[in-house]
Length: 290
Image (cartoon, rainbow, N blue to C red; front, side, top):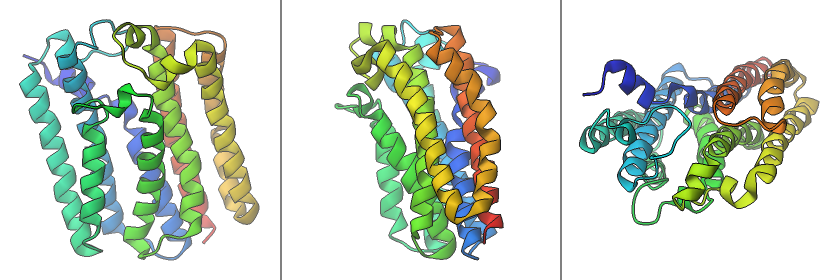
């Protein structure tokens, strides 16, 4: 029977910045437009975090039952390691989805009921990443969906539930956060590239190969930085986000110098820290620019 520490590890806390950062940025955009609403911002955060935990448990369940976790370098998986039964992990995923759904319903009641449809699509996308008959994470589409849902949907949605609008500013600042979140997935898949290839899991990393994936990872950082600078031309306070740049140096160096296995676990953690700090600074810069 899995211990509490193992269940916590299974929730993959290092990936939670991917859920927290877009809410911070979307809230900053709302504040820039004089529309900050603490309650709806908090509910958006609960939805984002619960969905992230849910997708982590769902991936653990789906990958474990498919047998694609047999050769892993990264953190322990509950089903693949035998620490928990598939049913127990599935229940954990369903409960996490339920928390997200309840918070989402409260958010819809306070704002607009069409958000129920958005939430349903988010849950479906979270489950079918590695679950269902045609998991898109096995078909090199994971990065596309991560950018859409953790970038555009999360940031613009957070701004919308506070301001009732979907301004161009929210779309613009969603791009760097979406790109950095994609970078988290890219370095994760780079770490698992050989194991994934061996079991037929066709991630983007498997298709690009090691060299292409390493270059793509660095390119995501450069593109995110360029968008921040572009937004900063119009809203100078946003440029405080550049204080996060030094945090990107270690993971980029590790990836570009051929780091493998455990070294990439550190790069994954570093990319998560960069994403979180970027979210904090970008959100604060937006709020100050209002």
